[in-house]
Length: 335
Image (cartoon, rainbow, N blue to C red; front, side, top):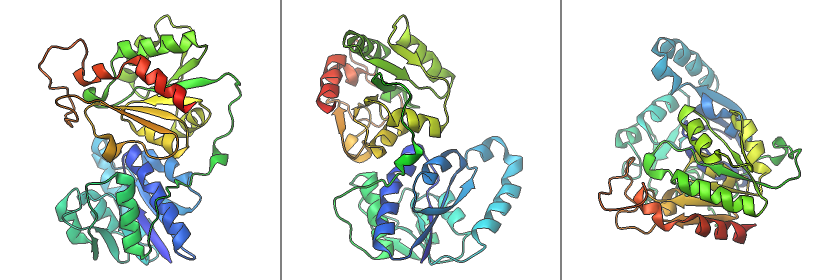
């Protein structure tokens, strides 16, 4: 049986789909799985040994380079339509993903209009599946695949990544990774809290590595690292390099960001911090994962910017409850 998975973005969402692919490979005999993904995240798909062919769409780059959209789309259409599929599963649930899925030959499956992000997309599927939205994204994807392919799932979650692709670190000194980067201001743990947590780590002889992906995150990393000898700001890395760094960490501290889900997929101990978002729906899931959810009058608000107007010593205000000492205590429980 040949299937095509359509899951384009984003980093965390692509990672959330990996256990469903593991399930399909386990339950469907002689299955061949191809995947259509945004070019920025193809490394994640490559890490899964059950994926045969990877097709890439430049969904983000096309916005910046519209002249390349039509010729590259035609080339992609020719690739994915070369041979028919027994089933095409759109795990994204957007109009753009449903349209791209339609380029391939075969029966298309996806969420029904009550389960999907963009209801019109469901009209492009032959098989429409009802999957409750009141559950974690990992379970939604697993149930979508199970319904489309006709098997039952259990509670065991396996991301299925090939760990041999992430070699061991040359250093023997234990280190933590701080994943501070996020596109939402309301998800950002205050810089002074990162600084205090780094100082606690220094007192305990633990080194820290900071990642960054753009100029804003680099400046934030500089502020955290200021005059703190146990902190190393890593050079800008691609996803393969980031995966190696995280896979060799003693533990990770993360805000609600895609790289936190990568730590979960690699079974690395991770303390994740949630204020504006709901950890029960989008939190890291897997072994050695601890969620610290702010309990605040307006949390989770799901706003990109903190809207709280009351008096507070911090912004976002909800994180005042999640102090560096509380985070450190939870790190110790994991390691």
